[in-house]
Each structure stands twice: as structure tokens, then as C-alpha cells.
Image (cartoon, rainbow over all chains, first blue to last red; front, side):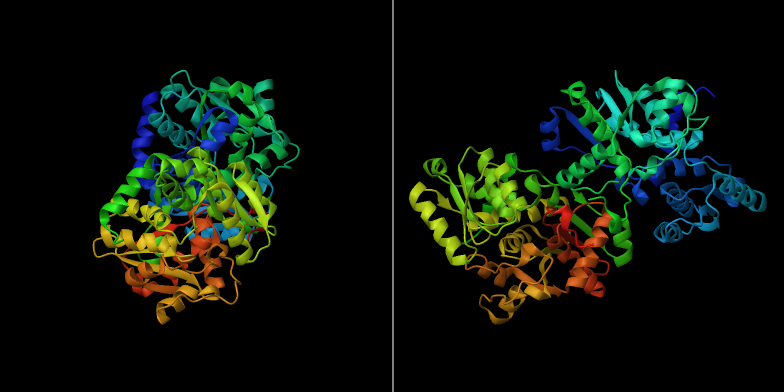
Length: 313
Length: 313
């Protein structure tokens, strides 16, 4: 399917009643420090605390009625598990969540709060996929991938779309790169609604699979996952990679130290709670300060779900 | 001086170009949990991170020009030191800040960032007052008390005034009680701009001097200061106490455990960084949940300056 501007417009129209139009914040101090103008799109204030609510809601709303009745299934131990559970709950649809038995209790509890039905399995990808498949067979539920699904990608793109509605003259929109759903959606929004705007990704050096994928032209994987940006450990997929390859200007890689410093700056100066993954985009701007001088920059703050008992400060 | 509605209106008009009109947030989850409607006035997003910027700005703007040239002086180791420094800097006025030599380096550094001129002295109130008096003698600077000064009180009241402009039908506005500047200003705003609205204070049981003062009809002091709400250890003064006595409906006292739980709720669910003192107002609502059921409540989030290396989680 050739994706068009009208697709994104329809998606935003469809999910609008079910999501928050999140606020856009700026910080005089950060702008002065970097001699630039940054607008932060605060998806940490989104329902369930992350942009993933957008994609999950769109994926469910786009199902035919008879499929809605049978529910949705995904495998995730992170924000998408919560997003799909809450979106499903709000739309009266059953949600089946496959989680590794090693997932922290706090994450399982969050899914249960939103009435997601958890099935535990060993933590290998093979086990998770097989378990999800078995649930599809048994229940007739539709599988929704956390990032490699076009409805999810278009849903995630609505955050950048809203940001460009508010600030049409941004030079750049920068977002973190994990499984590729957010950056693919953001790149499409930038393409259709930007005015000379470019989409840039921020990625931890420790899990720079997307940066390497753009270089090699094929989907690369990570051998380690040693980053505090725990939402960014996953790899790209066949649905989002072609979109990223075509529409993302560049990926800027940042060190753990740079992510930590940007995270602290956001917490201390903006007084908002954001996930380490969200700080990767600001870290990219700080790293290449000269290049972004006097530019108008949008940053997608991806989410704010952190475990207060395990803060990196 | 009899304080009138027009005084507060003039104050807001005067300080408006120099402060942020802070956003008002609400949380579906907290509202559902408490079966109520709470509107949080987010002074943690105010310049320098606290409502004190309002009072400090008003106190300086209200000085005659020849006094502005000579500067302002205060003694404070907390937010007011930063607020007076930043307000003075923005208005090209010298600011002299008396701080106890035992004050944490991080607080001194914050004052220096805003170009406040620090004089250190021993930490007793007598030493601080004497040092401030000496600076007044030497420089001709005007002393501005952090909470017991009518210009400061009126400045602090503008937060509640803005909140009532946005939400005129609040049943209650609740704020923390420390030195009394915020609650006195808030009570005046409620009196002049509320529509059947009442002003309530939240205070830690550990430093319940204001609660006792309302009982006894005279200013009481604290014997200990064992609270995480470190902005609330100070006592009322002769300028703000009569206003509080006349216009505050009640003070609700909360335990350290209740403050900590409310603080965590705000951080985890609202994704904003607030000081422990700010959580005292929400803790009061949670404590008397039945009474506040189905009411429209405004809460003044007093500030967001916390030391990330010393979090109470």
C-alpha cells in the first residue's frame, strides 16, 4: 500500500476521542544553553504514560467488528503491553498479553491494572511468538506487533502530526529509535505535514542496530543490550524499515553518559518525569550542538514510565 | 491597609510580564481514585521552579526607583533565595542573600547561577537577621522577608487567582502551609475571586505550628522539624497570620507516610516532578476523601526543586 497524507489524517481523526492531545513544553534555560528552540511533545503525559497508546488504539479501532469481539494479542514486557491492554479495555475488547516469566512484577501488575490477560512463557523470542500464536489459534484474537505493524506505525505518527499542527515551521523532529514504530510514523508525519522539516533519530551507541541498518540497507541486530534506555533494545522490522530507509535523514548515536546527562537535564530543569529512552533525542541535540544552533526543533518525549525504586541518578 | 480585590488585580498585572502563567493539569486516574475533580496549578513549572518567583518579583517591582538601584536583601536557604536572586537579576537590581554557612553547596550554587551575592553566617535566626541588617546598613538595600511581607503575600496569591480565572467554580483551593506567605495570598485570592470557594491548608503533623496557631489565636512555633516537606518548617508571621486567621477555613494535618504516598502518586501518575512540600495538599485530600467526594478542588503545586541525589523513594 502506498501511504498517503490522508491515511494519517484519518488515523488522527479516528483515535482522537480515545487519546490525549498532549501538551508541548519548552524550557528557556535549555534553549539558552543550546542557543536553539526546542519544542517537547510530551507523550509522557499520554494515557498510560507513553506514545504507544496511539498505535495500540489505532490498531484496535481498525479491526472489523467481528474481530474486535475476539480480541487482540501481543508479546511485550514494556509499554506496548500496557498500551494494548488499556486501549482494549477502553474499547471493550479482550487483550491477551504474552510476557516472559522473568518480567518484573511491577510490569505485570501494570498490565493487570488495565485488565490485560497475561500468559507467561520462557523469555526467548521463539517461545513468545509460539505462545502468542497458540493464543490466536485458541481465541481467534488478532496479533498486533508492538512496532512492526502499519496501523501501529500510523498511530505513533500522530504525535509528530499534532506537533507540526502546532508548530508548522520546525526544521527537525527528533525521536528515539527502538523497534522502529515511532520513528517510521514520525518520518511519515514529517514528510506529509512538515515544511522543509527533516526527521532524525537518536539511538544509544550500545544498541545501534538502526544506525547500522541504515548503513547496510538491511535489518541489523544487536549483540548486547547494555543501555539504560531500555525501550530501545529491540530491532527494526520489515514493515517499518523501508519507511525509515526512505524518510529518515539520519540517526545520531549517543553514549550512556550523554543519555544520563540529558535525562538529568530534563528532570531537573523541566520538572517532568521522562524515561531514559526519551532523553536520547535531547542527547543527540546536545552532542551536535553546532549543527542545531538557531534551529526550530521538535522532540518527541516518548514516555514517562520509570520505576522510582531504580532511578539512574 | 485594608486589602482589596483591586490590589491583587494590580499585582497580577504588574508581575505578568516577568512570570510564567503556569499550566493547570489534571489526572483521570487520581480523579477516579478519589471520586473527585482536582485541578493542579503547576508552579513547579514557574521560573526557578517555585511559586516564590511571584512574590519576589512583586516585592522588587513595587520599590521606588531609587530603592531598586540599591538592591534587595533576604535571608533564606531555600526557594526564596533563588527567587529573589532571579527576579532581581531580570530587573537589573542587586540581590544580597544571607545564607547559613551550613547550607548545602547545591543551594548556594543555584543562587550564584542567578547572580545573587551570598553572605554566609552562622545558622541561628539571630545571626541571619543581624547579618541581613548589616547589609542593609552598608548598601541601603531593602529587606524582603520570604513570607511575612505584604507584597510577597499578594504576589503568591496570583497563582490561585490565575487558577480561579481558569476554573471559577472551584469548591476548595488547597495549598501547603509553611511560612504563611502562600496560604495568606491564596486565601485572599479565594476571598476575592472565588464563588463559594474555601481555602484550606495542608500541613505536616511534624511541624503543625500553623494548625496550633489557628487553635490558639497566636503564632506558635515548632519544636522539631522532622519532615520531608522541607519547605514547611518555618513559622507564620505578624503580616500573614491575621489574614490566615480570618480567611483560611481549616488546616488539615498529614503524616510523613501520607506525604510520601501522595508524592509518589504525583510522580508516578502525573509524570511531574514536585517537591515533598507540594504533596502535602494532595495528601490532605486523600486523608479526608469522603469530605472531598464529587467536589471541584484546586491544588497549588508549590514547586519542583528537589535534589535528585536525595530522593525519598
